[in-house]
Image (cartoon, rainbow, N blue to C red; front, side, top):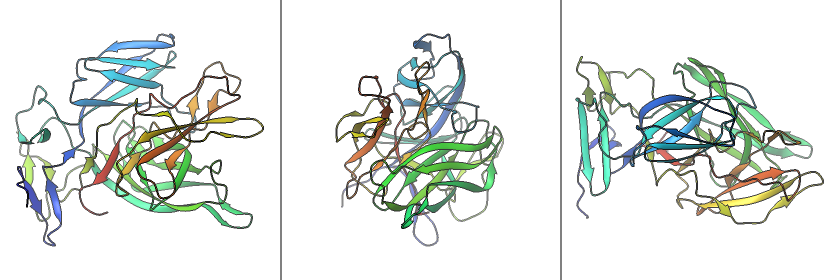
Amino acid sequence: MAAQYGLRTKDEASIVTLDTTTVAIRSIKTVTVKGNGAWDQYFNIPEITAGSFVVMATSATGQYASTPDAWWIPGRLHLRRAGTGTWQVLIMSSGGSPPAGVRYGIRTRNNDLVTQIDNENRVLTVSSSGSFFLGRRGPGNYVMSQNIAFPAKVTSQEKPLIFLNSDDYLMVSGFYVLGSPGNWAGFHLDYWPGHNGAAAFTVKWMCGDFSRLISASGYGARVKDEEGRVIFTTTENIILLNGSPTSNGFTVRGDPLSSQTQYWSSFQMNWTGNSADYVLANSLMNDVQYPGGSTPFYQSPAGFLPGRRDVLQAYSGADNQTQPSGVNGRTVLAGRPMRPL
């Protein structure tokens, strides 16, 4: 058996609850930027480092609360289609150097993997999870959309992060979070029949939350801050990264689709090969705005092809083949719970 370095804890059923040979997602900071109307806009944000990544968000709600395309390098954020809107920039960590202000916690390093739980940066944990049906039940009988309610409201100002999966095929669009800042109630998702109009599948989901209060009860290890408050316990179910988050991983691959009114370009990016990995829905699967276009919003379907987890499939719609469109600029990452849901 290969040597393992770091810390591992188990619960009373011998299920691993913390394993520092994996990488947890941590919240670094949320900043707000205001668009200046240009097509391409650039912002200096020193909190974006080599060990961090960005997810764009907006306090707007409803079906058309889309976010601009975003790319990042250390210290700098590039937005496209940001208009004059006000946008939330969720900066998260996938390892790297410890940020300033961290005084309490644990930090381990296993070769290039860094795991840190500290008094400043919360780890992303599963606040709720479940499953639901989408697609064809029988002739003329379809479940085209679902509104999913969380068991308890999420109280963060930022929208929670929703991860989706299925046992095999999945093709969905129209994602948006229900509720309002400090009172997030659930999410909406549509079945997308453009690829396979006879498909049926069960969507598995988990809600990632940085803000939830940590319970001090249960069997396992706890980390406290300088005031003795529990900031982490292994009774929580951490959401782990599998691979590096990216907003530039898609290339034009696969067969495009067309109808009498729309053309759907096909894009694919390499995926993990593991059906246990969920995909972040927040920026990838919501309807996308094209300011000034004849159709200002387009669906943004994405998911998994039958029998394949080597690629993530996405489509981008347009009125005709000449209108520029694409799916890069949307943060994509694979996440999985530390222990079974």
